Length: 262
Image 1 (cartoon, rainbow, N blue to C red):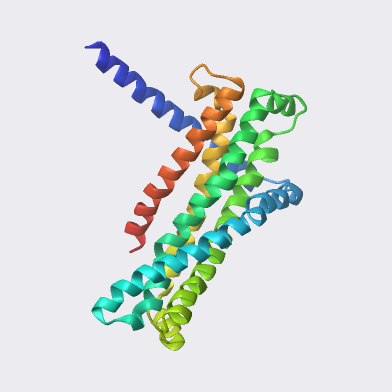
Image 2 (image 1 turned 60 degrees about the horizontal axis):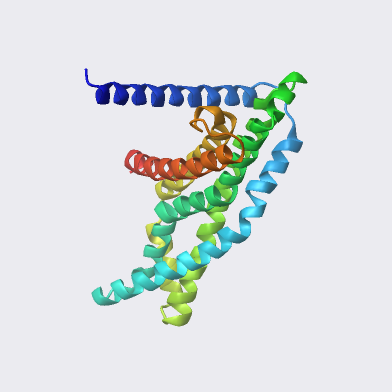
């Protein structure tokens, strides 16, 4: 067998082993979530970090995304004489796809990268080893509050993004272009189904889990991904990888969930 094929097989094996390590990390974190004792203070702290501190960027992004969607759909629907469907187009676009996906990508950039860097620095400085020496479970103390906060906060942030986006579309469609307010909201009410809302929140929960899981795993298992680099260089490398992998996982899982729920 050629050297190239051997290297390819070795790379695939390493990737599979790394995926297994990430899976075991998630299982251990879920175990600590389900098994008492429970502590609310770390969870509230992480909810404030992931959720409350992301509000401004989510509101700004939702406003301009809603305005852009309304602007683009207005031009398209005007050509077909279907301006009354503007509210339906804006609402469905935000609820089914753009709301969950863009919210998740914004949370990755604002909170996911910070979580990965924080955990990575703690690993480099041996702070996690110190916790274990003091008989403090790092999964319970560091990771389970972050996982829970991600699962709680991302759906709430998605809801805020969608609401702000709808009113951004209202501003462009109704106030700027003179579309009837009644037809804007009535069309939205007639076309949005419970299935669409279920899809939105299912995606948000999965995205929140993926974001925090990948960020924490990359930071905790830093030595498996830095390829010899350590210290600040290693932390910067795994933080970049965390953002890239999280974004790709969001887009891939978005397709899978859309295909399953449709």
